[in-house]
Image 1: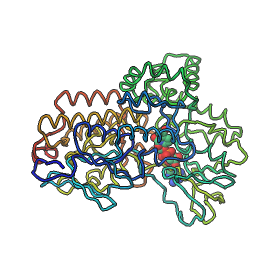
Image 2: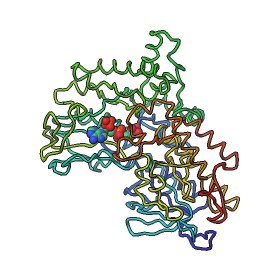
Image 3: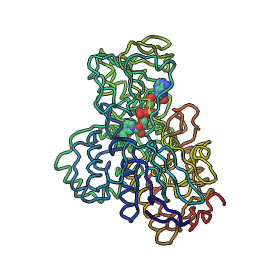
Length: 549
Ligand code: N01
């Protein structure tokens, strides 16, 4: 038990919501500072997104040697990844290993969802209530809920009339799903659908893929990691991580060329072919201006369209799989692990173009489109997430003056640096909206956020401050800067979940910070060097003037 500044008694110093990469590291850092911590986790185990997303083919598109913690030399030394890209079960094992190694389980309440968090201005504390009926007061309320945690399932007409089995990829059953011999429909061709499709095709009797928007999948080129490769990674680990921290995407890859301008057709082709062979996000590092310059983007997009046509036997099917409506990279670039496009050469796989012939309704036997009825035993929704804000808003968060987060974000999320929200004292959001988050290799961004928050709390302890809150003007400026940067890039040319476009009635604003991991990190550092510019500290709640400028 600790005493808060208003003389009341708080049960814990900090409540952390979520026990994935961010919640685990946050609780570790807070405990190291001597704070008492209560973590609430909805799932029965640690893992966050990697607990839930256990569909066949689930794998991380970031390379494994940088998709992990860097802060612990022991974890680094003891853990070895088996492949270039880590598969879901291995990531889950890694997070279990990290939680045990750091001895974090004791402070986590599993199978417990936070329903509400209310800031009590008189007591100066947060009261956090859970679905298990618990009520805990704390000084800090820290969200580690992740950016892609709230699954989105479209509200198709008569969806519940379907008498077969249906699953969302982000709520895949622990014991798997029997697909052998079944007629399976997969709805969605984003990163998840593209990972899933070849795996389902291998297992099912027949697969129908319902595609609304074709996508540009680049081969990931996964392979086992050899001993020599590991030895080299370990020998250069510090350098690799430092490069990742001060990079564009939180990945330590060099850009091959600044732009296509001034290069011959042959030079451009060779550069793109090299990127294609390197695979994964390395391809996106071929030209630095791919997401800024229409000319470069069109060249890159056209290269990828040609690659798709080469992989698909039937020209009519190939054309349906070729994206033309959005530029490459304006939606999250998906990776191909198992011959995604070649899957459509199989006799037992059908592509249903639901842009041309939309789904009209579900029936007891399957899915009806404007053109056909598809008889199905199993429907898999690979339809994505209420991204960036869904999991935060699923908790009923109430700040000063009874003002809710939902009200504050009616026109879209509004944070300062993605770390804090004005009007909500002592609330921190790890990889919150308007931070690089989903536009970066998450563990790099998570470590940076957790370190920033822990260092800030340590600073508050040393200065005798009890409260912190962003200034409204600082949040306003930061949101404008995020949107301005996005407008200068090609993101505005796609209807993507980055902009809230996938969920009906969601405000259409660009949510992640698109300026890159390095720029963002330097801005966070500058803010601290300038005495936490844009934040207010106080010894009492009234002393923080977040809502007044
Ligand atoms: O979700 P998505 P996702 N009728 O929203 C379609 C991360 N991730 O789960 O494009 C028909 O991208 C929708 O069609 P359209 C990664 O950041 C990471 O695939 O809206 N179709 C789209 O095809 C990724 O970006 C890893 O026209 C409908 C699909 O469903 C994010 O998760 C691995 C529809 C949804 O695609 C989300 O990816 C996998 C409708 N009514 C995923 N509604 C890692 O590497 C939606 N769709 C860590």
